[in-house]
Image 1: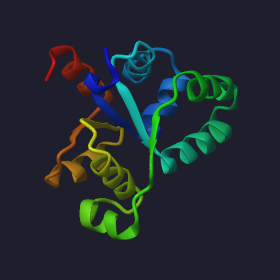
Image 2: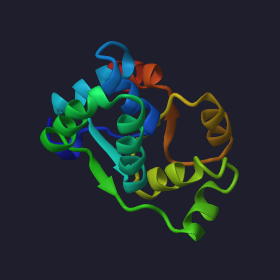
Image 3: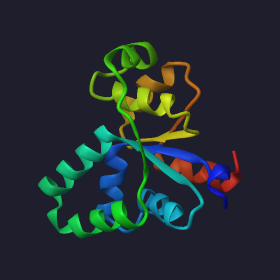
Image 4: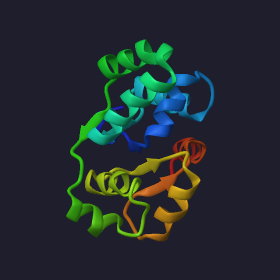
Length: 146
C-alpha cells in the first residue's frame, strides 16, 4: 500500500512497550502492520524519549528489539506540541497525557491508540478529528475498513 493511502496511527508509549515486551496481543499485531506497510505509526519525540526510558528501566532485554524497530521500521516522529497548543487542543485531559493528544491532533492522524483507559475516557469527551481507540479496537476498525 502506498504510504499516502495507509492509515496514520499515533501510538501511546504503553502500546509500544507492550508490543516490544510481548510478541502476542494487539500491540504486537499493530507493529506487524507497520512492518507490512499497511499502516504508518506516528509518535512524538516525547513518546520516543519515554519509550527508551521505559524499556531501559523495565525491560532491558527488549533493547535490541527497540533498536531494530527504530532502525528498520521507524515510526514517523512529529514535533512535540507547545504549551499553548496543548492547552488549546487537549486542555481537558490529564497533564501527562495532553501532549500526546495535542501531538496526534496536530499531526492529523487517523487514530490514537492507547491502553490507558483513564486517558481514553478523558480524551473521548473532547471533540477532536482523531479516533481514540484501544489497540484491540484499532485492529477491529482496520479489519473492517472503518
